[in-house]
Length: 564
Ligand SMILES: [Zn+2]
Ligand SMILES: [Zn+2]
Image 1 (cartoon, protein in one colour):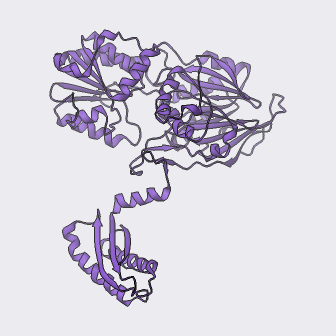
Image 2 (cartoon, protein in one colour):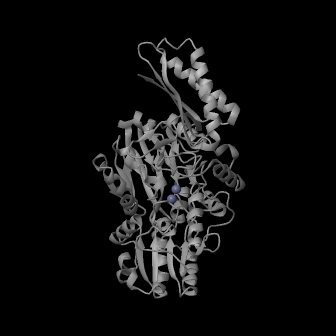
């Protein structure tokens, strides 16, 4: 974006920088940084779940080298809402940096569990904000505007800067009949757009490829009620996101209406229900719930179990039930399992596995593709067009999506009349500068995937590459023992393989390899010279050639030279 713009507003103000650390090019690890007068405001700091190409990786975070380099300049982090892709990375960030966090009671409550688990709460302070609240955070004037989403208390954030209003929608949909009556506050957004003008709009692109509008969450409630009454003879097990409190409330209401008691299975579901009760966010009566340990004393047809595991997570309650390993719930004929959810990209395999296992166990299964037991929390094209029309931004950058979603969101903006040159399709790591002269792409910040593995912290790319090779090709270890004084080979080469080819087929090949390697070693001038690195190189090259010609594979080859 090189084009310069003349502004009607008279601004003789410093530039404002917007840096995208994550979420532009993938669904997950959302983080946008806004810099004013050398101070940085983070909007969200989320995580992403690994896909099948990231063996052994637990989580993926935004690359925060930019924040590490500017650690004394971080003013705060404001949370749009309490989903993992928006706040799940904070505990890791707070292990190195310190800054206050602003968000709804619920977003903070949900973020706190990992922050306390990591013991890094002393590096932050929590500031609860309510709907419509406007406050100064350092040089930032921030207003929190209600939006409807698949977790209660979502916010759009309106950030007033010396370069005008930057409006970040957060994750939103336009649901005119939300479960809690708390609608996306289009009136307030329109009022800001009309009276102050929105200089830059950053808007959720998740469903930019989907036509029309997302159905109301209340539709799910109706569907569930109908299913519950049609299946009076079945025990019902329902899974959904543990943070989707409105969904849980609707499941609970359908249970009560059909005369069922409710039991909760899974740690995060139990924790979130306790948090929701504490915050007064769920209005289901306490008497409707029973302890999961007591389900044996109830008629199964009078039970509903609300469970974790909507993403097929292998250790979740539903996965354990599906594979017959859950201590308290044995799934079988007579059970109806409802997956009131949609698999996040990357989780499809695990979800399909769970569904298959449930069928094998004899259960009846209903999921989002068979019935309307799930609706998205994100706006589709018509809603995105409404948001763009109300905001009437001078500039627009689609955020929160894979690249295809961002491009399609940009097309929505063009379709409703925005100038092509006022729309920037940015990617992770891009930095844009808003100034009196307009908006310009200006440099980059680190945007690599930051892989988190167990408690070790981030693993490097070479480790991941090794794991991919090991997972796809296997490993061959070649061991030789060398006499320390003479440098003569006295044992080996012994060859050990894992995950390469079937043992039976490999016997002959391994014999051939041993002879080949033995010959290569005896022909080599390295032998006797104590140059072990050269011996390792020689083993690796000779074995590599043989393996490539005979098997057309490229397993990892690990030569080991032992001094004896
Ligand atoms: Zn969300
Ligand atoms: Zn999100």
